[in-house]
Image 1 (cartoon, rainbow, N blue to C red):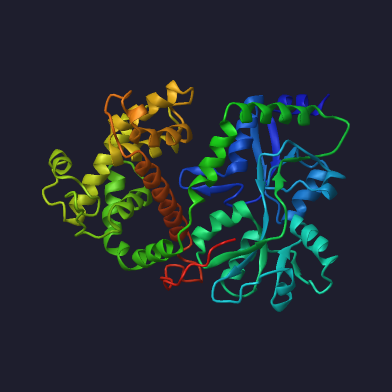
Image 2 (image 1 turned 90 degrees about the vertical axis):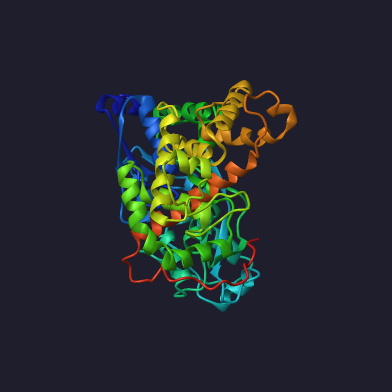
Amino acid sequence: MPLLEQIKSSGELRVITRYSPTTYFEGPEGYSGIEYDLIQLFAERMGVRARFILPDNFNQILSLISEGEADIAAAGITATKKRNHWMRFAPAYQKITEQIIYRSGTSRPRSINDLSKGILEVFRGSSHIETLSAHRQKNFDLQWLTSDTLSSDELIELVDLQLIDYTVADSNQVALYRQFFPKLHVAFDISEPRELAWALTKSDDTSLYDETVKFFIEIKKDGTLERLIEKNFGHAKTFNYVGNCTFRTHIKQRLPALQPFFESAAQLYNLDWKLLAAIGYQESHWNPKAVSPTGVRGIMMLTQSTARQLKVKNRLDPQESIFGGARYFAQRLKKIPERIPEPDRSWMALTAYNIGFGHLEDARILTEKQSGNPDSWLDVEQRLPLLSKKKWYQQTRHGYARGREPVIYVGNIRRYYDLLTWLTKEKDSTVDIFEPLPLEKEIPAL
């Protein structure tokens, strides 16, 4: 019986993966990650459930799939010529480059030659070793340590702790991790663009492989793949070192007094307190006395009319402002159609919080007119800036709006939310990650 039929008959797709923000992890809303999302869609398409297997290290992932101990390895695997000899790769879903990572405050390596001045460590079984080996053919002094137990994510943390000088990481991984470790920087790329893909056991039976080909053709054509990449990585495209450091300082200095209010309000309105706190930070940097030139005030920057509607008597009272803002966001969320899945539903509610529900609906109508999906945040996000262009806002019911603002607004809140989720989860670690970072000049990534 072909492998595909065996999987359908058993009702289970066995998937090897690894725990990482770039692949598969448990977040506030349950499991997530690009590999998790893709596999869940693929399994649903076949009418089976996915069973995730997490080996102890990356090397075991490659060994297990090559030996046929699972059906698919979905673990952010780089498709290389060497690996093609003993495993079969599904169509690529993302392109990355391999990058040398170092920490600010240390000497930045300018070329491969400079890596001999410090400790470079990578993990065993990675494509990074293949890349470094190719470079060593031209530079015989290039040396590195190989870890059997630490993952790429853990080696990135060692660079941040200054226990090693450099490591190699994929560009998508760096984009996410620089939010959590703002002192990390990219020195230079050491590879041309490479493709990430699922790995399958190499055999004469191509039934499962053929199904993955059909799947990726389908999700590329209908835009699903682009939406999943945006969902998992889109908010990490823009990185601001100073803003990140200021946020960490405010977490330590301002959040403790406000957190009980965020938690209570979130519980009352069935929200995640960290998302509510992220909204508050975007609005006012958690400054209870914040006042804008247009007259909005307080932690949640409520207008006078909105405060009156929400029965908030004193907008500068932190508790009143936070409870009022939570109620207002919950109202916006309730108006978003329930058929829209999370997190898109929340991002649209944030847009309504920022520029009003009417302008959001205008953008969704424009999206539909342009053959986009009005229930997809990625599609709506692309049309929001049109609301500031006369050609387009003349076609809408509510007219002109500064449409770029909610795009930036939602992106910032997503970054603050990710950081709050990660920092609060790691608060009990031995490293004081709540310690504010010095505001130093940002070193641009090349």
